[in-house]
Length: 156
Image (cartoon, rainbow, N blue to C red; front, top):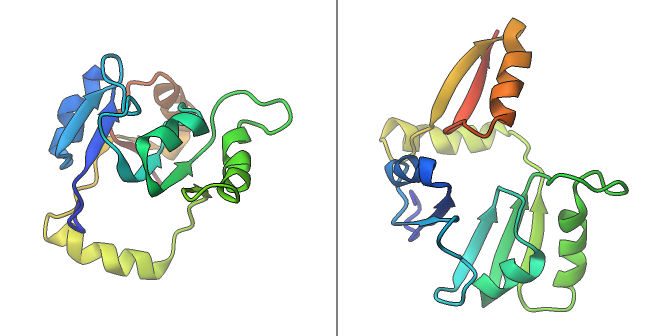
C-alpha cells in the first residue's frame, strides 16, 4: 500500500477492522467471499495463511501475475507442511504465472528503507501483545489460538 498499490485483504470477520486500519482498500471476509471466484484478478498475491491450493491461487492471478507463498501449512509427513511451497516453483516452469516461496531474512538495508515509511506513518506495525522471554510458551499458545490480531513481540 505504501508503494501505491491497490490492496485487497482477505481475513476472518474478527479481523476486518484491523485489515482496514492497516490500509487495505478492499477487505474480503473469507467465510463469505471467495478471492478466487473470478470476479477480480490480482497481479500479486501474498499468501500468508497457507490455505489455498496452487490452482486456486492461479485462478485469482492475472495471466502474468505472481503468487508469493509465505510460511508453511499443517500436515505433510514427507514435506513437513511445505508441500505447496515445494510444488510452486515446479508449476511455474510450465505456466506464465510465477509461483514462488519466500523464506524471510532480515537485512539492515530493508530496515533502512522501512524506517522513513514507519516514521511518516505510511507503514504501521500492528503488535497485538508483548510477552517477556520467560512466557514464550504462553505466547505460542496464544498464537496457536488464532486470536492474534497483528504480531506478537517477545521482550528480552
